[in-house]
Image 1 (cartoon, rainbow, N blue to C red):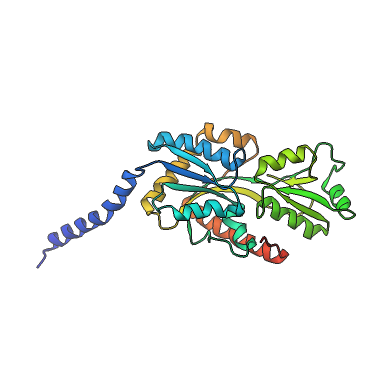
Image 2: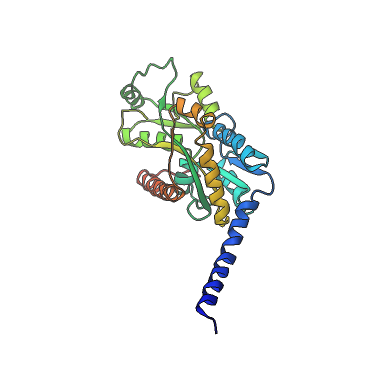
Length: 291
């Protein structure tokens, strides 16, 4: 029969035994190089953020950190690579408004569920989307553009099928009752190049006043595969949070108009859930779909 002191001692040993494995996993991590998957090609905000994070994480974690651009299919290529990887925290993905919120509703057979297949790690940054036209464009306001597009179709570029720019174009088309033809690109950089060259008429890329119902923001965050051990996810969350407090990581983005998202892991998880819900409602209301 256990004495009171013996029972307390046994309980303490059990508690220690239960907590040590979790601490050990966090202390041992990482044991090999880390990959950061990016759903867009090189040169865009997500890619630049990944490379800035990689520099800090490489120094902090003592392992190589490799950025891999796996663009296409609205984030499904990068998402599939993440889900195929072991759930051990060595593969991260920088997702955004589209890949973590919109595209599950836009694509008929999207290959993963952001809310069940992925685990939010840390928020990164947010930027209101802007409506751009070429410098030589005759449109000096949103009203000018809408008036023109009522009489003839305009071409709008986007970062790809299912991207936030694609959704905003379809929202503008539906809300204003205008003619717009979608021209998808592989990321922001090539879309902006063709806009500057007047190959397309407009681009949403990171909306000012004009149409109050056509407003969304680009946000970015880090996720891992669901099932990754909690201590490892927490360690990654802390390290990404540390990186986002470093001026060498954030200054260039703040100068471009991005806002740093200051949230706890729990707040970020709820944010992703709410954004997915809002996106689904918008997509269904406007009947937007991508094959």
